[in-house]
Length: 198
Image (cartoon, rainbow, N blue to C red):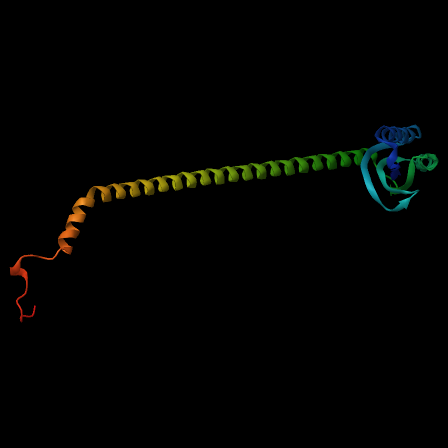
């Protein structure tokens, strides 16, 4: 059995229900003409390389199927007649394909893609958890620094208050000592005699 790949572009203004209906219709054409549809991929909206019938975007769909040349011809004939189809292209992928093997390969590819997606999501979740843990650690460190700064400020304020109390309590004794040093001595025995050098 020959293996074909047909890609067609639907008008973007049809809407999702019309897109789904057109895809089902073309899948039915493949099945009713002896074809074996292996895979239908909806690539979605994409920019066109150039304007086609005044459209800058289109909804891309890909069929992977097996069948005779008449199957592909009938699919292309219906694509040509459909008003909602902007462009289509069919390619002969394999002249004699084992469709059971093709289906197995496609399923294995889907499984690998799903595993890769799950692994990527797990990596993203792990990275998000690491970022959250780092942010929490930074917040904890910032809070600890703030507490330490507050404790240091409180200790400094307490030390200043203690120093002020000590100064206030020791002021009379200090003033008396300052007066004793500043007052001249009235004791004549401590005064130097005239003519003697001290």
